[in-house]
Image (cartoon, rainbow, N blue to C red):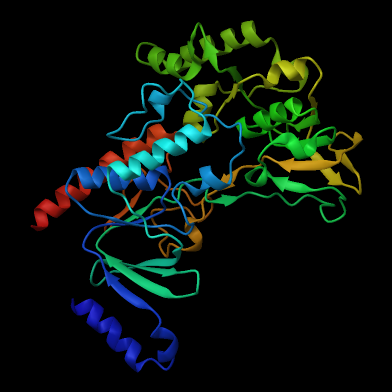
Length: 410
């Protein structure tokens, strides 16, 4: 291909030719996918169903590295399995309604095997940029021994997701605090915190579940609830809350479904505000739709809060040697701090393009359902803030779009 010959010619005449000689240039006729998590696997499978080969570049040494390496042991899918399956392959019938972490990983491995998906591991994408004159994407990677490669393709699918990098807040006094401060990505179980007083910062699903796990290991957890949060029972009327909501939305407006969810939550959980968990002004579904903020689906943590086994505090003001001062002036001693502060996209750090993705949060500027397609063969999968359900929708649309484009070219 002329473009590849031109690149090689530039390397020969480059004053840094010795360094550049270590870089390989690889033309790939199908799409290049960045990320071998569920989103990347789903996109590759949907493309393969259309007869289109793709290549996945993955910085880790395994598929679904977030699930394999950065999740706690007791994790289960928070939604029923039928809402979490990837395209073209359901979960096994013998899996429970809420599969465990280990079962989900087994499912992903079987998925990759079924569609013969073989990512290129240990390839960190350093940059990806469009050659506008030739309408080609050049994706530069670096391997374990700093060897470089340039992958060139007509299509680039960004599948690194919303959870590529840890979010670690800067809190005054972090250097002074004597105990361990760990992000939930490094937390496996409460075993190492037995009999210790632990502060969990963040009240999303992970923060709430880590508190419950700590209770089960005889730790003394406390929870920082800085903002308002919707806590809903995981199940209502014998059905999953999420599934019931989806069913009701077929017949009722979102505002009425939100009123129903809040009424049932009040009947089942009581007044959460009385225990420091104040609800947002917007209902849970409306808030999710407008901001992407997911309600907490309670799996037993709230009962521990009601029983006094988990204390609730307001925002952290500063850390001291063995203590934490909160925004309301209260000071308490703690042995350890766990940051359940979530993750963020890392797309702006490597994608040299600013039209499709926001530099502020690394998410597509166009929100669901329009954020999956950019210009000049650029796509995004897994950025809908709708979990694996959104991933499946994106993957199918991308495969169909690339298939149509390929058919027109041929």
